[in-house]
Length: 105
Image (cartoon, rainbow, N blue to C red; front, side):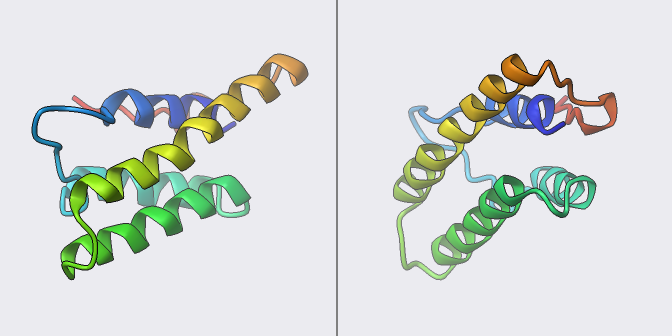
């Protein structure tokens, strides 16, 4: 169920760039995460990633952590989560519904 949404988020937010993009204050990105949480409010992985992102964004905004470090921490948590989705989908044959697909145009 969460596979397509997480893959879309993974592809839309590159982990490494010359100057990293700060998606913490990006309204579209924040809406995407809010929609994902609304569509899967009981999914522990979604809750963990949402909470981690929110906490890291607050720390970046408060100057407690550098953006580059926050990105690295988040990507370290998100990448295995996406891989777990692929593994679970392969084992169970589950597919995410189209309404969880988050486009970034």
